[in-house]
Length: 394
Ligand code: NZQ
Ligand code: ZN
Image 1: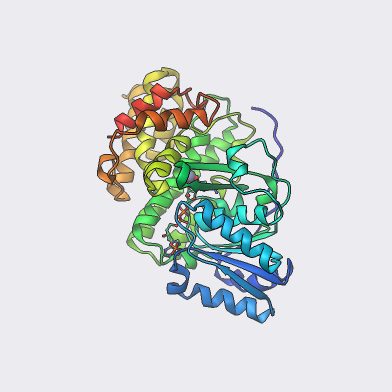
Image 2: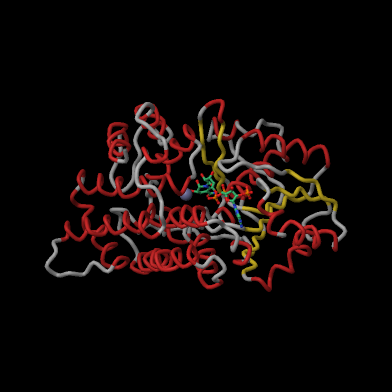
């Protein structure tokens, strides 16, 4: 257990009653607002009108950046930066899922810089030291971008998808009204839930010493998603389910669970290559990868069985005393895979989503190169390991 510093200065307005504070919060940060949103779901649900109503009440000037893509592209970031500079924008308001919020983060940074925003992804040593203030209205429980300092941006010309974080990118305030996620379709509820599980497992599955408290916290997060994701899929306007998923999304990745670990994330670098090459939904790619990655870890390093068995016991109720530790670990991996396919209806193979083996070698090399040649995580992964995991996903 290493020491750590923990501070997330994002003000969270949680629940339907708190949404009415949006206008005053934005007005406290400036008079000209760049409103960022995606492909139009916020117009169909009426959220756009509710947001504009509050901004109008405060007499704010609004400029719009619409059409931000799932797996947001650098072109959208550049367009947002251009709008900020042209209209002298003071504050950025992102209304949407992780893609809209991620794009907005780099719009905020780009607006306060003369660089092309891709520079920060091409060379991650270039510091990001300044950014416009960002406020978010979350519509999809998944990425945790509403309460973290990271954004993930795609560059289709280079077939790259890269993440980058900086403290100045942390939202100043985030509005988490679970009712704003009632309209999320089942496929995105499922993918978002898989993403929350993945964020938790990336930290939970480690061979480092853990604080019992943090392990228990993460097991609670995982049990929350396992319990409420199927409810939200069956009953999309179930407030309790949507609220639990939304708050879990923020806490899975806001740094609290890390507890000073020197872990490296493993499934995410692999998934980002799948999204970069095939533009697939992030959480879907993770759901396919996670069980195969965990089984690869178990086979490569039997010492991982203890933590995987703990996961099986605490989250999936695999408590049969007749089972060996390894058998428990395997039963837990099987339970997770079955949850993704049987409860969430997610595809279980890359073939089902149209991905063949043509780029496995290249994607594996890029995934490892992005981590300095080796992905240091639950077990260390070399390119050959990543290829083997992709092959197991076919
Ligand atoms: O674009 P619109 O029309 O809004 O539709 C979106 C989009 O089609 C729709 N949607 C969102 N809220 C909705 C809704 N539809 C109906 N009702 C609502 N209330 O859902 C679709 C997917 O949205 P998107 O924002 O792409 O999903 P998500 O939140 O899963 O974000 C995924 C992106 O975040 C990145 C991923 O790589 C991916 O690019 N990540 C960001 C992270 C971070 N910032 O820390 C960490 C994650 O690991 C992840 O990598
Ligand atoms: Zn993720």
